Image (cartoon, rainbow, N blue to C red; front, side, top):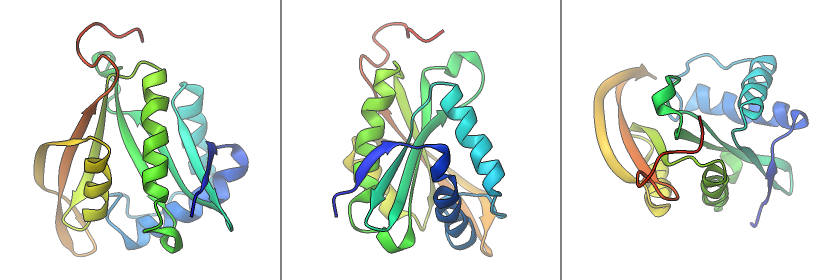
Length: 176
């Protein structure tokens, strides 16, 4: 399946919320334990877009089948050129290349706003597909935080992965 990728809009919030709800309730890709409402997802989308950060959706035959965005890694000013990736794919569309297409489009969108580094924070174990996805996109392991989350009756580690963008750390960022 070759999805159509585009910037997410307000009209996509119900589908985004549905995909995320499934991830919250059944997976470990997020450490949230209660699904946020559509209104909360709309607020999150609006805040990121207003900050000039990319949020993409993938459309398939049945509408939105996945989404990806880059948010601030941390809010302090010195982190302004480091973004954290998030990629979610509807359960019925996993394994079809949707995540790869989204991440491959998200990377240049982040470079276009002069982000210099992307970070992925991946639950481990249990997210081997996410590790493979990020490895395939040039991310490398940067460390592991053992037993920092407890979800679905077990302790989970987070694997940190990162990828340089554009000129990386060879010069100062343009984002102030």
